[in-house]
Structure formats: C-alpha cells, structure tokens
Image 1: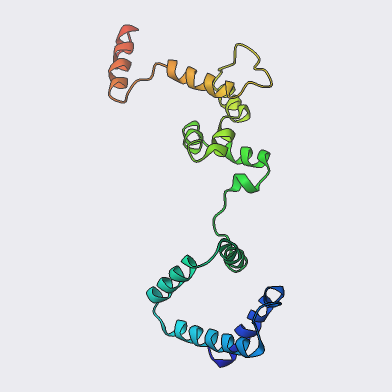
Image 2: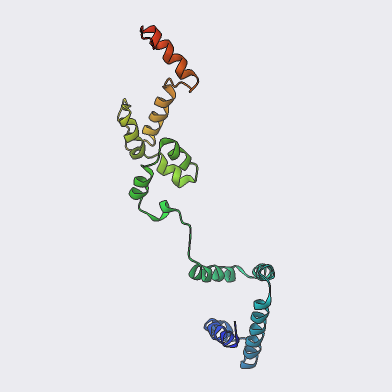
Length: 185
C-alpha cells in the first residue's frame, strides 16, 4: 500500500464512525491521532513477513469481543468467496437425490457416513427401490408412509443372503459344476 491507499483505507474506516462515539471523549484531535496510528500500523503490517502477519492477526483476534469477531466474520464472508459447499444443503432435495441415484450402493453407504443429512438422504427409498427392482428383489409388503429405509434394509438383507464366491473359489466350483453336468473342457 502506498500513501494514497492508506488515505483510502482511512476513509473506508470512517464508515464505522457513528453513534458509538456520540457521548465519548472522541474529538477531532483523537480521531486524527487514531488515523495516524492506524496508518502507521498498516505500514508496519506491509513490511512484515507472512508469519509475522499471521501472528499479529492471531493476537489481535484474541483481544476481540464476540461482536467484533462476528463483524470480522461478516467482512470476510463478503471478501472471501466460499469455495466448497455441501451441494445437498444448497440444492432442492429431489436434485440431491437425483445426483446420488448415480452412485453405486457401496458409494451411497459411504456417502451416508459424511454427516446426518447425507445419511438421511442415503436412506431414502427412491434411491434403493430401483436398485432392488433391477435385481428382481421386491419387498414382500408395502411400507407405510412413515417407514424409513425399508428398501435399503431389503437390499442389505438380499445381498447378505447371496452365495458369493471369492475369486479363488470361483474357478474350482465352476470346474466342479462342469464335471457334475458332464461337460468337459
């Protein structure tokens, strides 16, 4: 920052003047002294290394009241854009569910571990019923409107009952099945 930038920052600081100084000892002389000291601190700040600046900011923030910290948070929210945001909190629920419908069952279960809101979305029947129906697994009853996660429980129960062979067992049992039916290779 050069000298004109300091003057600009001081004029920006004037927007914070107001009713807080109405009945105080704040006079034009103390205001001028405040502006000079602010300018000096900003000049020093420009000369410091990144580590020194961070140390100074930490010390300054430790001295702030809650209202001052909230004000700082609001100023930062205006100047620093949000780079990462939970899409499920921003988008309508049906869009979040549509996006999650492209995930595999394993990925949906992993997504359920992110937070309670994702767990709530990952339990929805509209995600699990198409996966079950595609595999021919139908619920033996109609879940009530207040029943939660019936299709997911059904999917988990059906996959648990599958007779799945490990890669080592598969060739052996396939050969045994071929021999049993009289097929030779």
